[in-house]
Image 1 (cartoon, rainbow, N blue to C red):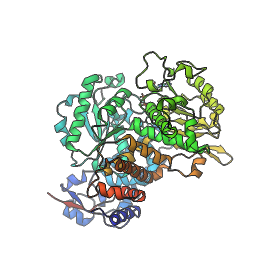
Image 2 (cartoon, rainbow, N blue to C red):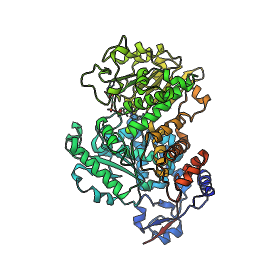
Image 3 (cartoon, rainbow, N blue to C red):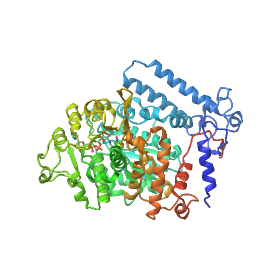
Image 4 (cartoon, protein in one colour):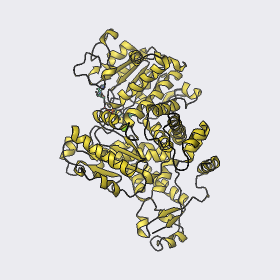
Length: 604
Ligand SMILES: NC(=O)C1=CN([C@@H]2O[C@H](COP(=O)(O)OP(=O)(O)OC[C@H]3O[C@@H](n4cnc5c(N)ncnc54)[C@H](O)[C@@H]3O)[C@@H](O)[C@H]2O)C=CC1
Ligand SMILES: CC(=O)C(=O)O
Ligand SMILES: [Mg+2]
């Protein structure tokens, strides 16, 4: 029987943690000797106590002195600081890759120490293991490759996946992030090199949601690439063939999904960075069959909606005013369309009007300009958001961003186009004429060079009173006279870890719109009024575990409300349904893994 005392005690333990002397539970290991030293899940390097060295056959395989976890931690951070000092003045990309390499080497060697370093310094290290540096890593993956991480299923593995899945050494997998590398951030088709994204996303799962790193699996589905440069590259590590299309493609994804759920029926699969057509098609195909979601469509939508609602509050208006906000979305891809769909549903809920009526305040622009019903070959996915020319006096099909901004004078300009600098000086200056006294600019594309504008340019040209958000991090902007232009990192990292953890603990077999909506609403209400009024819409990434505990609890409670929760372990649906909101948050928090060296016990 689940008991409250136990999880409260566990969570207190987690919080009183930093190098606490509390003894963690043992960990069973089926290896001995050098095999343990070469396994990053179990390796403690010089941190193995002498008794453990004896028990595991490690005596003599390590220098005699035992170094504590705390000393190892300090030693790593000192090396990292030296690297920073020694690379001062070098080009940014060189420094970022050097930082990634030193972290990656630790990751390859000792996961416990790696994740401790990451969790305790997440604000500093997220830009290295996640956007923007992860983009650079993917671009250079074939050259950077030293050791594999995760699994690779290729078009050549057709018919083999059901047995291949058993090659993964862990008995249990909770969280899988899957990509086919076809749209990596705003960098396009990077083929097999896109594996860096699932790895980075899962690092965020461990850091933010405390998913045990032994239960995560990054996966690359290599169906070829249409990137000519990679196809010509001698060192390219993926299949040198054009991407599979149509049924051939879907057969491969189907086989992979069936293999995963045959071995791990309770795993969650997060689809990441698929080109739009496959992002929508696979979501439609699998969301009622498997426990999966598409982060770019659904996670991004939730984070953007929270930002849009935060903008309303930042203007000092009641949330109900959201329905009056004019919003221009630039980018009609998986992310932009996901945002529009969720935002329109929110307006429809708030007003009680139909979704058709709720659309009037939204404008969609893609590479060919304003999307209207007059568009030739209008993409069916964008069609529901196309403007009827009758409703847009003074604007025509294909109107440019500047034309739309000048005419509409929107409250919000939101970019998910993948095109760096597209919010140029002229566009940003036009935002000064916004009908809002506090307009918002979201340059959400990643990595940094693909952001629609920089934070400095936004505050310089659109005015100091704007609200600003970007997908990749920028420093806050010094506006002079002690004033600060706050930068929000409008990135799906605030939601996907909580969506994953909440779903996992709920034991639900599906991820529903209701669960995703609960996640977004939770993030939207997370910030206090005083911060929101300063233009701070999202919490600091330093508190990502707290945010994730709240988001996870919201998702879990939504699953309970929808009677989808089956629970996990000895916490069944009955226990879950009896938890108060606060107890649910504590329960989620208590289930977060935190890296400490556990005593290793050898079992044959
Ligand atoms: N901040 C965040 O959390 C997230 C950011 N993103 C970023 O959003 C970007 C787009 O992602 P997806 O929608 O999946 O890509 P996508 O390739 O599906 O869509 C890109 C869209 O941008 C449009 N576009 C291209 N050039 C344009 C131009 N010059 N003017 C106006 N529109 C233009 C295209 O027509 C297309 O509709 C990427 O850079 C990605 O990194 C994606 C997901 C989450
Ligand atoms: C953040 C993210 O998922 C993307 O840029 O694709
Ligand atoms: Mg993505």
